Length: 330
Image 1 (cartoon, rainbow, N blue to C red):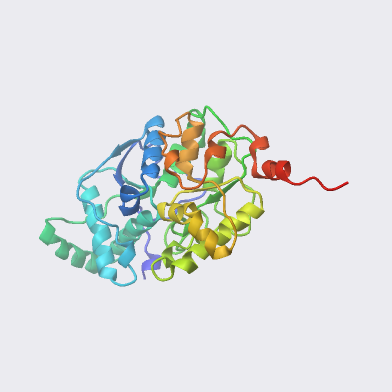
Image 2: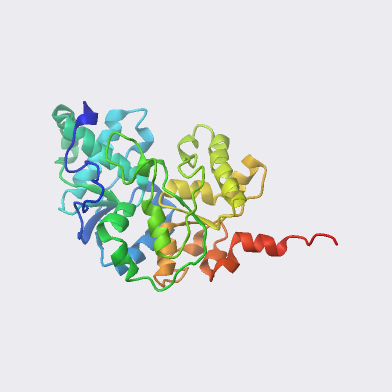
């Protein structure tokens, strides 16, 4: 049974134990489709942050989609695409780094499934011969959340912080693929995901609990029913505004697309949505002293100026609402 297969590449992290890649400084980047074609600010901000932290990223030629878009229609096609990308990465010995949670899950799951089934691995490699490739299954795949929190660590990151965001009420959004499924090692506890929260608190933000913290953004439904998909994003944004959050930060390009496109989401919930949405790497980049332009913040669709110019609680959504509320009559 695949769920009982355990190997060093996909084993769950042990709480309280150092990450197997602790101290690693060089990774091979797998960028995926969405970031490389439309979500450039994620790559821009991640590059600035990782350069500051002394993390070297190697690029490879020839990658394709990770296969996540066809997983439910063609399992062999999905495995072939993920294994092919891993085979390209295996021309170096560096661990594989992704910024997209969906890509990380695809590559991680391919390692898990092919490591558990030698026959399946052989079938995939037979098909790869036409491209002159072979998948060995030797590289661990990590997401940038895992890299920042577990491999670099909060203490090291804190040495590079030159600005904080006191009183900033942030809703960290991990996205589904960062914490699911349950039968292979996740980046964080799916019932109590705290790593992104800890990183936000490191730079002075507040991360109050809210009831829809792990709700889906709606992206998986986008091709089947775009109105239903954006209604999930719109509902979450509307609730966060009601609860006086100042921003939503996320670590997934698909989630960013859903939450940042608030004109469409507004129509699905019948309310005006105006909540700053940005990548965590953009917020961390500001805390490290990079300019908004260097981090791609000028390309956000939502209005992030309040976050860029944040000085303290006086800039919060709650303070703004109180200042503009009508004075009760006499």
